[in-house]
Image (tube, rainbow over all chains, first blue to last red; front, side, top):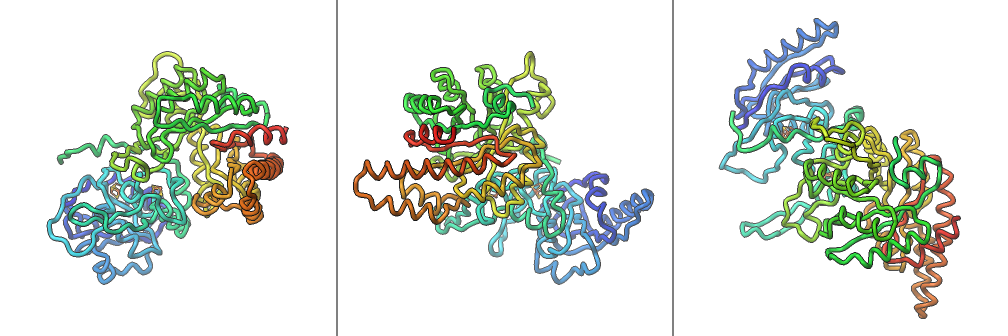
Length: 224
Length: 307
Ligand code: SF4
Ligand code: SF4
């Protein structure tokens, strides 16, 4: 199970400022409290109201999917044609999957992912892409999480270890004894962030100076 | 910018400066690096970096080494401090400690990941990155506070903080944007990775001119063909120009050891003095950072040839 907390509306309005046609995407999966169609519609109407009262009207609609953490499912269930940006009501995993399935438009997070539970059943390889840091920064990083996907968790990368887009720290695949059976090159998260923000014409976000993260809110064990 | 160190004073007076590099090891014994420091000082090097667990290979505290070298040899040190091994409390402690010991320069680094070094079992820190550390030191020096707003009692530390830069980054745009962040955070000088190709250095210096941060270009005169080849093949992003590699390949064939090193020294002095004369013309270039670790014979003739 994944616990999220809604971001302040001001922060969300800031993400959506340059865009006039937006789709809010809910998730019927494990996120708690529920962030499904009803919550997405409520979010859409809050944004619509705020934008029209500030004289910058927006066309915004809401939908939901069964799970934002399944790329295949998103491809089949979601049609984003005509939208300039997506706003995800799901956890940091979902925001990143939406960004990778629909790369031509940015997906912004509406939630701070507070922590992740786990599932015992596993189908195929799994990738870690959210550590539930409690202060989601995907809105500034092109929907790619540096907290989890940068080996050093840097705020202002890439570091000097990024060569031809690859990280200085390799991915080590281990067997059940813990022995390394394969060493692969990992993508440098910050290089991916740079490429994506450049494609989206948002290098202003890449350029932004980011002060160190507040780790106080991610201290474990947590409770809600 | 308020210059506290000899290095920053010289730069702000418009002097073209030279810095060197010292690498203490996993040992209490600093006699070798101190003799090195004396060689650098006699050759006219203004200050030298003291490395902090370079390549994530643990070594004696760079704070202590920076202090002892500066005290025992009179060469000003640039205390390298990496965020890989310390959180923001420990970093603040060390910055205050450095100021109390009279150190005036810090080079803020992120550092290689601990998994790539000799102690991969360690838990890495990276609470801040190099840019965050620059911001912390800037705030301590100029506002007497840490990043959470906690006040420093009594006098503020008097330290000039610098950052590393990589002219070999491809695309260079990434590096320029990164350096814009570092400048905004309060970086007062930059020292670069090794550059061999004068065109690479020139292009980089022009791209960052708008930042108005004095920049020292890093060079590394190689002592042998093997070393030159190492840079060309294995150091990320570094390209050694073909004529340079060809010359070193010819030197490799010289049987007489003495004669071979004479030729190599001669070539290095000629190549790098013309390199220096070229980059010196660029507005953003405040000096040269010579990283010829373990090759003292080249420093003095090189320094004399560019006087
Ligand atoms: S920044 Fe990363 S770790 Fe933090 S909530 Fe967002 S996706 Fe998760
Ligand atoms: S190379 Fe990229 S992903 Fe790896 S530690 Fe550096 S910035 Fe992070």
